[in-house]
Length: 383
Image (cartoon, rainbow, N blue to C red; front, side, top):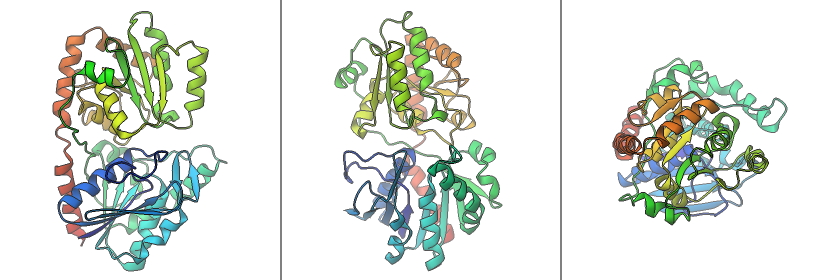
């Protein structure tokens, strides 16, 4: 099949290295892994996304990636008007929309309308429009108005967890059946010893690391890790907190770290390349994502695949792959909840090791080789 993957962003990493300053998130990671798996099955894959500068076209075996020229940058997301018409000259058998931000869904729908191509629409989460009078707020509120129409145009709709399917405001506008295909993780070879991993990222091999990875935005609550660090620093002299990611809260987090005198135990690394991120997953003793809203939340699963215990908030999506007290800890998305969960793990290293092993074993169920086959089944059902 000739499969078109429409996504706002697409990773800049092998074999599609593009620009060291290019940033992306979880949806882009999903599209990347899916594209490579479809390539392995002999399909012709065409990815339509946005550049962070001029247009670029990249090819690897059966995969062609179009990065259309950036016209607008919005909170580390690159938007291109050219993605609305640029793909129209490419012949596709099926269109697969990945809706994080609106541009991908709009572009794929316009392609389908023009060519009559069957469409699969994957909804990766709700969208927070943000402040009413901001550019983002106006754009996303306008998109929400046309969401029911976009969904109605799709031949099949999928999402990433059953909990999100049942609770999503966005999916409530869709009358048909919604299939759940979870996100997956890829393994990156044999795990190195934790001490070696810590030394590899330039950290103290004897320190205990709590890690956050994600967009620095309000709903992910990275600031709770600063409160946790302040609360626990006297109890655990070897405690270190590492925050990876960029976003609208970065400046306020940096200011809080300085004001509370946390610079000696908290590192704010910003956006890092994929290899560095994976090394930190292995080096960490605990990964923490205390979000108030997620549809899947890829970070805890990525960490689990590197044998690191996740601490997550009590959301339906996390309960689908984290069993409280067995392969992670589920807690209230509050500073008190994060403090107690982390304290529980730091006080009992043996239990932490056991939970980490179970987390790694559970993550093996989310293999991209299996999940890609599920998407191929969906494609064949509409072609």
